Amino acid sequence: MNPKKKNPDIKNKTGKSADAAKDKWVLRLYVAGQSPKAIVAFANLKKICEEQLKGKYSIEVIDLLINPKLGNEDQILALPTLVRKLPVPVRKIIGDLSDTERVLVGLNLLPGR
Image (tube, rainbow, N blue to C red; front, side, top):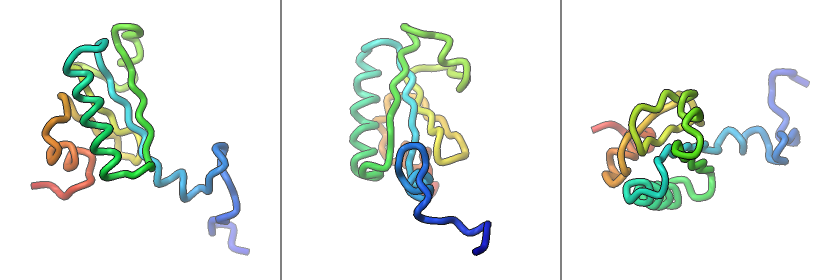
């Protein structure tokens, strides 16, 4: 058996195969409370994810009014900000995510203009 070849029967901590975990998108949306922009940004993000990623994503909403130190890791300077943690490389999009084409390009789901 080739030790470098992946065994599809091996599961990670979540019980999914290593390949399934690799397909997962991890997104963080940094907001400041329940502001209108934050609500719109979350709704737009949810819609885009449902249309483009169909269950292969997780969204973590981080409210910097509650815990401002959490923004340090991703160097958040403006709100709302979306950070794509996985797949790498990390990408950031600032704003309410209402320009769907710009968000898709920014997440690398569409080729650039």
